[in-house]
Amino acid sequence: MITFETVNVEIDGPTATIYFNRPDKKNAMSPQLHQDMHKALDAIEDDGNVKAVVITGVGDSFSAGMDLEECFLRPYNDPMLFYTTNLVALKWFQRLKAFPAVTIAKVNGYAFGGGFEVTGLCDLAVAAEHVKFGLSEINFGIFPAGGASWAATHNLQRKQALYYILTGDTMTGKQAEEFGFVNKAVPAEELDAVTDKIVSKIVNKNPVTLRLAKEVYERTTHLDLPEAIDYDQAKLWELARLTSNEWINVALKQFEKRSFRPGVETYKRDVA
Ligand code: COA
Image 1 (tube, rainbow, N blue to C red):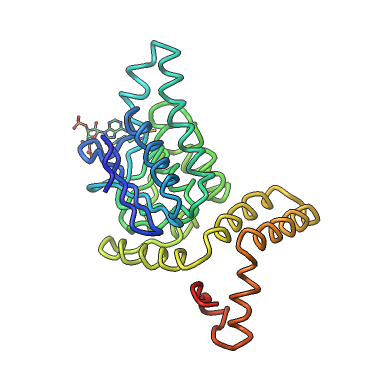
Image 2: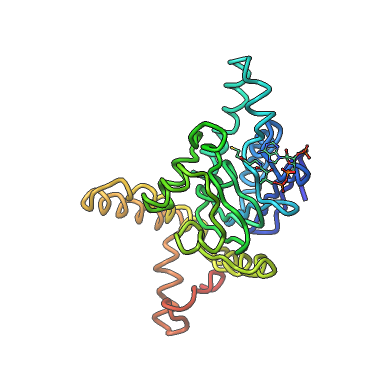
């Protein structure tokens, strides 16, 4: 376990788990936590072998979002301090969204503001059924900013996104699943096991393929079909080169021998 002041990181082979660790403050994101998140992402990148990053909270909360006192109230009268403090947050949010490994939010409790956003920025998300998600910004007089509105608009349908942005109402884990904001909502006692099962499906894949699959998804959402095909074909050649053509030389050779069925399982990566 690597411990920073407000964030812990556990790296176990191809899986890393980041824990927000301010349970007495519902894991609200203080300026220190924002700095620690950069250190956590650095540690995972430096390891070089991580394919899946799970983000969760210590205690009964995922994260109650930005620390309203430390990030907003206290530095407000010093414009440069306010700007630089919050820039650290805005930068790790963007880093998380572009992270090369697969990111999975394991939402164990309250997820407001920045906590809602982190769930939306992650590639995948699993939540306990009882948790409460909320964009509470409207309740204290602003709109969701720093990527929080983006997280809503890119994970929810328009009416739902606007409902939560404009009312500040909370959404349960169960509703989040119905709306597609999380992949699964499960009873709290099953949260770890269900997340582990998803992680196990990710970590037996080739890491280059995972990274390029994310890149192709992200880029092609903004492209018309001819450009999308052109882009994905170029990426396919990149993949072939960076993986020594593993899909042809290993995976499809196993299929040719009828030793695996791609529809229902992954090829054996350590077998030629
Ligand atoms: N910023 C700073 N402190 C926060 C916080 C936040 N976002 N969220 C919770 N805390 C603090 C509380 O002030 C309290 O601190 P204290 O012990 O020094 O009084 C502590 O965490 C425990 O929270 P508390 O409010 O007592 O717990 P609760 O179970 O009654 O309510 C919440 C939990 C999450 C509903 C409530 O704390 C809340 O509304 N937080 C703000 C959520 C929010 O608007 N986030 C968006 C930020 S962009």
